[in-house]
Length: 83
Image (cartoon, rainbow, N blue to C red; front, side, top):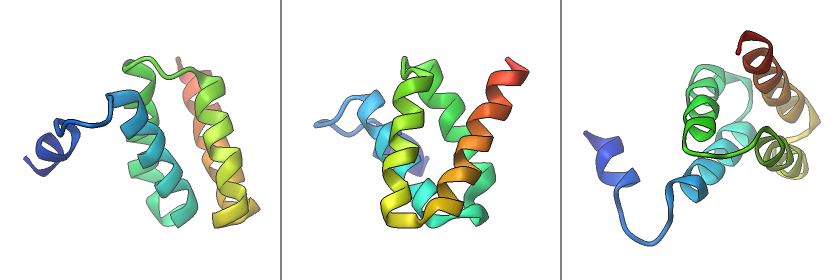
């Protein structure tokens, strides 16, 4: 229910919301891996490209650190190999 209220708010499209969510989860580090995976999958479903997601993750290396970004990129890579 909470997600419905947040994701349905006006002002940002779903792609922008998923970019922001992926960025935040990446910067928070490895403890958010399950949520990151779910939101990367959802971002792909709403039309984000793998490149857009990867670039969002790389940008977060400046804020969450390189290890957090590498973990997030590995999550994206795993999803790519499964799909």
